[in-house]
Length: 619
Picture 1 (spheres, rainbow, N blue to C red):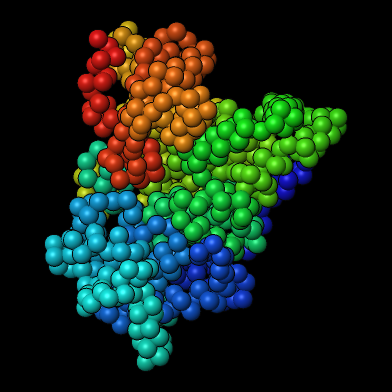
Picture 2: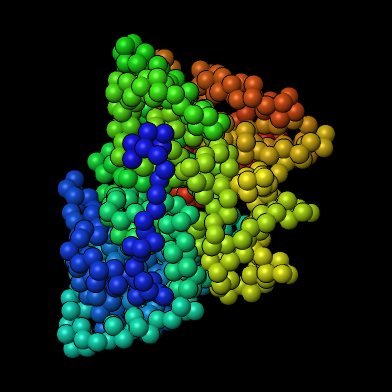
């Protein structure tokens, strides 16, 4: 559909199309039997898209599974995957599960010491790695992992001369699998049928911002239950295109990017690498696109920078077009009808400007957009709505096996995460304001950490989410902040920092922000700039800089960020306004301890590490 207000209600037809199966491997193999020659997956390799049918993927998965069994992989053992998101990740995952094993995903940005902890804690016997870089981590720690038997490499580039009996390529593993399956034709099928709903299927480790990562255990029953609920929670239908690019070891992409498409029958499109996402999404033009707020902010920033470089006529066309779109967005949010003349103006706006913006972002075919995993600026949601593509906010956790709520496309409420899905219950704790969840989708507990598991649940069995929120008369929930993040100023004022931070991140020059002020007289903020956009600003305004640190210290850049803070301050009461700021002068990446694998600043660590700079803002 082109947009919500031109094509009526979004319907869901997945209920009849979702494949049966009480475990993930049974679901997958029933899908292979049902869909056969239809395209299952695509991946861009060296600039060229390659496709695999369901039959093709079935053959590959059976070969990988056969190879694992040939090497002695036993039922209920664990295998880990250390790789960026790619088709081979999904093949390995499905093969492990088809062996009646347990899959554990590891972020490719994790250091060797972290990989060691995750492999040791999970009891990993086989480790899949992406390439030479990830293999180096495995080789560094393997002597400390006596249970680790083999390491399998997806991409052998640069490893042609490697001679190590415990390391083999994915191709070699598949070759072993073909031989094993020929001699044992019914073994994999037996293992698939032996997989039980109550069995452990996945380990999904939390990011570990406070202490060691915790391995959340998910059963087949919980995953399949969640999959059956997804089409009602988030509209889906067979035959569309999804783009899979976020980390598959994160529960959100594993469910929405891999398992839901396999369940419903949607083509999975894997990007070439994380750096090619903007180009790949324009080529894929997915029918539904899920991304975290940082990605949506990056797309918006790219458009804003492009418009500044456009001709005056193009700028005028965009300004008029987006204003028409915003008028419709406001009426839609208010529940007011959109008259025929405004609809006509919107069609003109799309023709002369907005469709070009949609194509530039890669959302021209999108029925709707989905955002989650972190709060998002309301103005950013409105901007995408003004383009004619509804943006739905969803909420869930690792422990809830993905989505627990989603704003329905027929009743948009910005700032809300929507009502609880029919598959789980939600409530607000009357004393703490914490959102709590209960349902069959809730995880089994944390591996090897019974005390942490016990702390996570109330006495009557509700999951403590750690999110503070409220619910309105329509049953729509809104998250105000994390319980541990609420700021109480020296004057006793309760502040929810995420609201200010989200408004700041709407700026094309700001990537992330952490508001400071607990037990202090006023609020300050630590800011991580958007390097690409700020560098371009500096070049356009002849601002001299020699490196990233000097860029952040340039008076013109400091003034630029102050303007952005002043803009946001106008939206808040005096006590909620930020008085001073500090720009991080180190260029951070996912390998740095200050960032989570999903590229969010770790609030507590940042406050501790940059305490001298914080104190300077209060001196």
